Length: 234
Image (tube, rainbow, N blue to C red; front, side, top):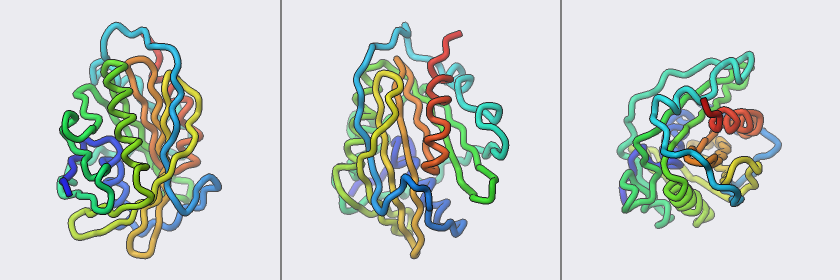
């Protein structure tokens, strides 16, 4: 059992959502696309990106979604400091091997990155977040594939955040055919008698990967816009 850092793409998202679910008393998701299990998706190969070199973090930040893209009812969340270094996994060796060291654990640990999160205040308390990463097409493809495949290598496993144990179930789901490669997963987190369903869709466009996570309905509503904005050239 290896400790995980928040630089792991999926497990970083998992740890944040676990703490949210356990601290705010969130209720079971009722989105029609959800199921009792969680899931990760297939990928579609396509054209190679034409970018000459990876983008800087500052350039990525300009391509993130903002309130004007999302519409009414969304508020930006302040970025939280990293505080989840005591996250560990039991019951799934492949997921347990993910760590902040890309060479040893297969995490998406690129220095060029940007992130934004929003809450949707339409009485649901739903959230959606976007992460952009930049690297060579080969590096992005290999690392994202490795993480998404690890997440579905076991039907269920447990994530320990401090003394809190959360059961995670995962299963593949189709991802929209956007960009050169696509991945999708639907995850169900269960702790303290409550469950939360989270969808995560990742799309590679050239040397950028856009990852949209959160309420399944919100992810489906905004992933196309996120990808379109991520691929814009200036």
